[in-house]
Amino acid sequence: MHNVTLIKGDGIGPAIMDVAVKIINASGVQINWEHMDAGMGAYEAHGSLLPDATLASIEKNRVAFKGPLTTPIGKGFRSINVALRQKYDLYANIRPAKTWKGAQTKYDNVDIVVVRENTEGLYVGLEHYLTPAHDIAESLAVVTRKGSERIVEYAFQYAKKNGRKKVTACHKANILKYTSGLFLEVAKEVATRYPEIEFDDKIVDASCMHLVMDPTQFDVIVTTNMFGDILSDLTAGLVGGLGLIPGANIGSDAALFEAVHGSAPDIATKNIANPTAVIMAGVMMLHHLNESEAAIKIQTAVEKVINDGINVTPDLNPTSNVGTFAMGDAIIAAMQ
Ligand SMILES: NC(=O)c1ccc[n+]([C@@H]2O[C@H](COP(=O)([O-])OP(=O)(O)OC[C@H]3O[C@@H](n4cnc5c(N)ncnc54)[C@H](O)[C@@H]3O)[C@@H](O)[C@H]2O)c1
Image 1 (cartoon, rainbow, N blue to C red):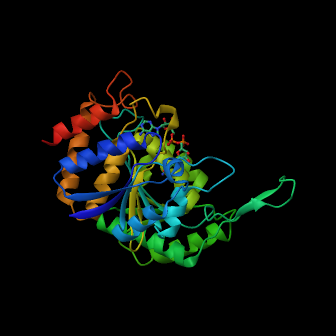
Image 2 (image 1 turned 45 degrees about the vertical axis):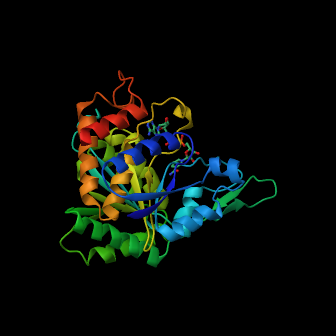
Image 3 (image 1 turned 45 degrees about the horizontal axis):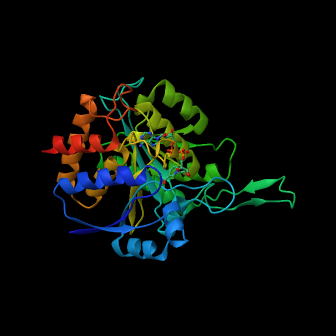
């Protein structure tokens, strides 16, 4: 029996997480879900965006399965997601984007994993106004040798374990000579320890163009925090959108699994959110828990349903009127 902290989240979170949990339970794996609050829902219920009880649960279980959390833009608090990643030092954010046969896109052969540094860079929270009139603002990026080394090491180890052939470091070292420069220098050093894996580096803006023109040039991408945030949304777009892309946040002694997408307030009450991204985050979590048999069973069922293209939400098939819960039930039926 595994103990997992379950945070359903805001917006579409409760619906897609209910579907994902039902599917994981139906796979036969034994999980004791510890329901915890975070985000706007937690604020409304307990006056705290990240209640102590939620943190205590993650500290105890060391594995969390989390729905998207709403972060208001501008004034007020910083992202709870960023706070969680920093608090538990979840330094590696793994975001795989692979073509689904049933999802119609411009490409039919994308298979890219973005390995994003998750705790440093421009998201460290060193941001403020420089003048009382609030007419100049600055943000500081922090890149360390240790942080760069462990994320590039992670990317090469991931490549080795998963039979990947190439790692590309994406950066902006031509302009950001210190922060991106240090990351690139370390990436080149680490690459020499893995002669069996091809390595190259690309400037991030050129990477965007190359990704759109010919995504097959990429295999594993390793990059700093904000570039990884942007590039992984781009790779999501190459394979059918945010509804399909899971993410794992891995640290040395805790891990948190979630979708790449947010709480989607525009569709929150419409029962049309695609649950695939969180289900696939669940699949990543089951591999992490050494429950690979259940993980493969779920993945095979999700692939079948998406490839059939009938019991899928409208983002995958515009003529479909199948909702979030019905798609989940179709996946459970496909598992039998
Ligand atoms: N990890 C997280 O918890 C996380 C990540 C990103 C954004 N957010 C937060 O979510 C909120 C909304 O952010 P946003 O609107 O910029 O991004 P979003 O990812 O919520 O939505 C972007 C677009 O994608 C669509 N979309 C997202 N998930 C979908 C799904 N499963 N199925 C079908 N369509 C889907 C939405 O309808 C919307 O049109 C913000 O408060 C933001 O801070 C949270």
